[in-house]
Length: 275
Image 1 (cartoon, rainbow, N blue to C red):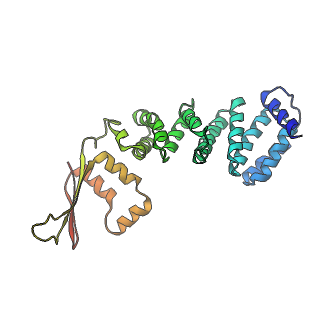
Image 2 (image 1 turned 45 degrees about the horizontal axis):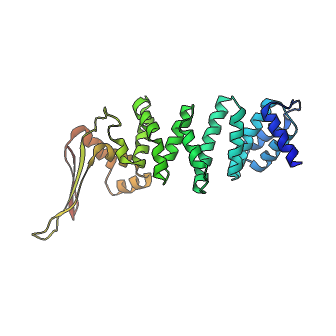
Image 3 (image 1 turned 60 degrees about the horizontal axis):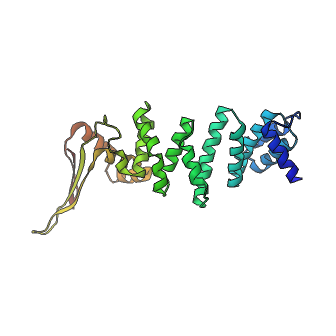
C-alpha cells in the first residue's frame, strides 16, 4: 500500500495523474497548521495527497508537509519534501520560503555530520533569489566551521557594497567580523572610521616606583571596535552601563570630537581616544 501511495504522489507531482478530488483535507490541514498542531496537520496532508486533489493543491500540500516534518524534527524527510516542492512549483513566495527552510534544515544536518548538507548550503549561496543568498550568508556566519562560513564572504561583501539599506549593510559587516575580522579590510572605502585607531590605556595608580604602571594598552582599528561593540550581548552592555561605562556613547562621542575620554576610579585611570 505504501509503495502504491508513493508512486501516486510522484505521479501527482509530475502532473501525469489527473486530479479531480476536492481539497477539504488541505483546508483542514491549514487550520491545524495555524494552530501548530503539526502531527494532525501532517495526517491531513497525507490524506490530501492520497485522495488525488487538484495538481495545484498537491504541490501546496507537499510544501506544507515539509513544514510539518520540519517542526516535528524529521529533518531528512522535511528536506526531501521541500526539494520535491521546488522541483515542480513556480510559486515565488513559497519557493523562497522553501529555500530558506532548506538552509535551516541543512545547517541542522551539518551538525549531524550529513555528507550532503555542506554542498546544499554552498548551492543556496548561488540561489537566483537574492533574499535566499543573503539569508544563507548570514546563517553561515554563525557556524563554527569557519571554512564553510567563509564561503559566504563574497555575498556579504556585495551587500556592503551595493545595498542602500544601512541596517542591512551593518549586519553584513557584523557577519564578516564574526567570520574573520580581516575580511573587513577595504570592504567599505567610504567609511569615515577607516584608517582611524581606537586607543585604550589603563594606568594603575598604586604601582610601586620603578615598575610600569600601565595595566592595559590596546590599539585596534576603529571600524572593528564599533563592530565589536555592536556584537556585544545586550546583557553585557547593560552590565557595563550599570558600572557607569556606556561604551556606545563614549565611542560615538570620540568619533565626533576626537577628545580624550578620561575615567578615574580609586585604583586606575582609563584613557580612551581616537587618532
